[in-house]
Amino acid sequence: MKRFFVFILFLGCIPAFALMSPTLSAVIEQRDLTELIPVDIVLKEQMDVQTLRAMVHSLPRIQKRVRVAEILQAFSTQSQHVLVQYLKEMEREGKVENIKSL
Image 1 (cartoon, helix red, strand yellow):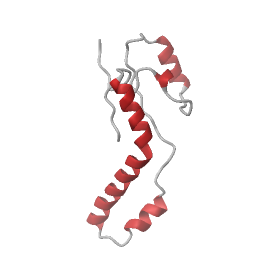
Image 2 (tube, helix red, strand yellow):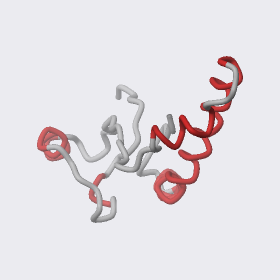
Image 3 (spheres, one colour):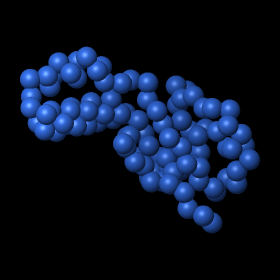
Image 4 (cartoon, one colour):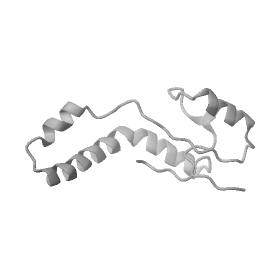
């Protein structure tokens, strides 16, 4: 069986706050129950650009790039914590594989 980079094997186990595209719903209905489906999850919460700019405005360009990366990484870690823990639990149960937080 062909291996896919996958976030979720069985999307029916995702809490009710999740939304799926009609295309993904059709793929889920047509797949073999053991087939993994590649899924990208886009979260609604985003870092406020104005706040980010204010946090780094006085830094030199090279330091600014590094600091922006650090701030965004910290924001992502905090805002994705619950979802990542949920996906890791699903991974332990064999329902999810190859979780990658970007």
